[in-house]
Image 1: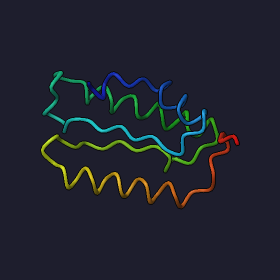
Image 2 (image 1 turned 180 degrees about the vertical axis):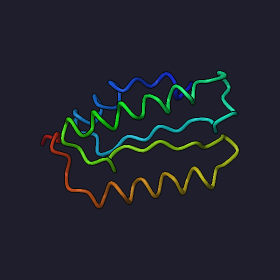
Image 3 (image 1 turned 120 degrees about the vertical axis):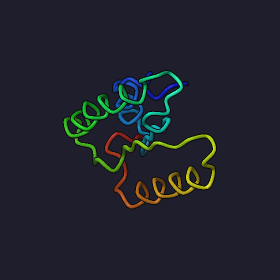
Length: 97
């Protein structure tokens, strides 16, 4: 339920199992339902970016966005933008089949 619960290993696991991209969406800073989960997420994103580099994955395969439940059109645009960015990338080096 909280972006702060997404461990970097979950992101890397998805990508190394062939996912084309991973996006984490969370509450806006200062608006976290769990007090400071989004601050925890921000710190974890730095670790994720380092891991992407270590695994030879493009940084465009991962994205963090702050989107509230009341921002339907913004959520749709963020998803569209991520999808388009991932489509411009070469196939994942971890994709099989």
